[in-house]
Length: 172
Image 1 (cartoon, one colour):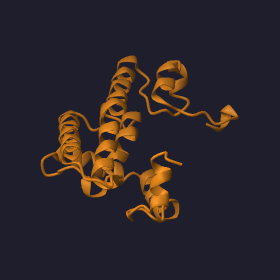
Image 2 (image 1 turned 45 degrees about the horizontal axis):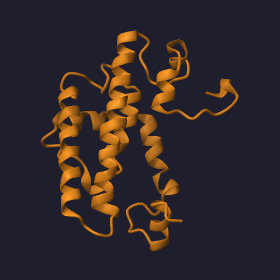
Image 3 (image 1 turned 90 degrees about the horizontal axis):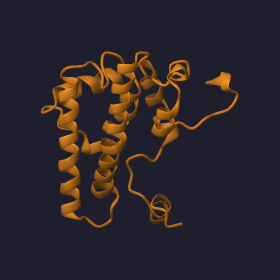
């Protein structure tokens, strides 16, 4: 928000501490009503504590790890599939993760359905997840971001070099 005069990092814990009267003007994707805000925060924390970490681990063990560890791959894929089922069930009753409107829980969850490449959900098994993913992918802001994909990460999808692997996994 340019009116603040400085950039502020946003984390879920900072969002929880932000007074409700400031959350809406800051454009944080939270509903104005208390119940809606609590539901949005609940689903944001679901993403932060489940979908995000497990999707990251699935990508790590399935794509980045040099050594294949079948138990780790299977464990992560099984848990991510369970989380996809939870989200699909939620989306069977709501247009977006926290309700009728696009918000912070959608913003936090959606990228995990794009970064995993071949690890995308079984959309045939999760039709509501497919509908939601398609609706967000079609948003103008998301389309503008996709247009910058090559510019931002021209090496996406290629194997990491040893040096890149050292940097990515904090060994440098």
